[in-house]
Image 1: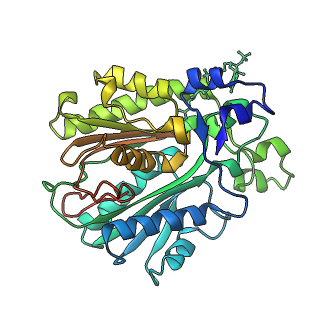
Image 2: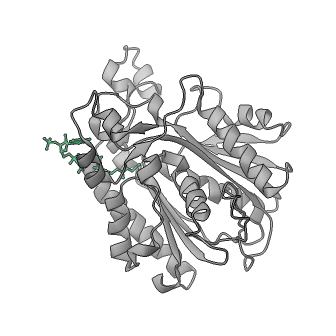
Length: 333
Ligand code: UT7
């Protein structure tokens, strides 16, 4: 665990600034020998155990911090989980990665190409952060979450509804690791040390996050013929408590319905929403039959939202929920 006071030992910051500007109190940092795949395997195993099955047709891993630039990390994760030779691939949508992966998984099921899809969202942002950048060090942490989606019916508890997704590539520089890819390598010039690290224009990102999460949430509400009064819980990307409150305010949603765990884990990028679902369930804040609105914004820029009905789960099994989409089921944390 890394607390705000720990950060203040080498950064010009303090607990009060971080708490009041972000809501974060502490975050988890992966041990040096544990890469993203190690966290992903752990989360995937917990989801399979909770769902009581190892019958998986496809593995989708949402991550921006793969173990290596090549190959993808998902095949290694699938192998470590003992899932044989199933299709397994990475999906990069930064902090919207879980919702993008959920949409892909639902598509597999709805089209009849798969019956069960394991969606894992895992990131170790500590490996790409600049230790001297107080703005990003204050908010990000490492984490992983997973859900098992399986075929079912749209009116069942656990059903995942329409997933609204969007992107705006003109905003690519707002959240970026400038070097290490073909844009820099193609020039044949060594990367500047600074360009190897994650950079974020926080204030501008904040503004876009509130705008896009709100409009995307409104879009899935309209698509489902619902109003905000039909929403029991709002689980938004845990980037900043002020973003979550601003989105709730713009939606007209009671702030008491907002699930928050960023105080304990910070912004865990792709893993943020599944971890918040897990913690909200474990704390008894998300109960069976409740309608849960999910919304995220991330680098790219990318964004997305969906609405699901929370399924019946044993209280101690917050690790793995099960949801479904139209012809298929989606999810599981
Ligand atoms: O996950 C993908 C989506 N990400 C987000 O949605 C993140 C959105 N952005 C944010 O959450 C906020 O912009 C941050 C938490 C990253 C930064 O907070 P802010 O209130 O927007 O601060 P700022 O970047 O506008 O900076 C204001 C001041 C600056 O000082 P000067 O230049 O005015 O002297 C920063 O250097 O606050 C300073 N600052 C800090 N001071 C103490 C930034 N971070 C810190 C810090 N401690 N940890």
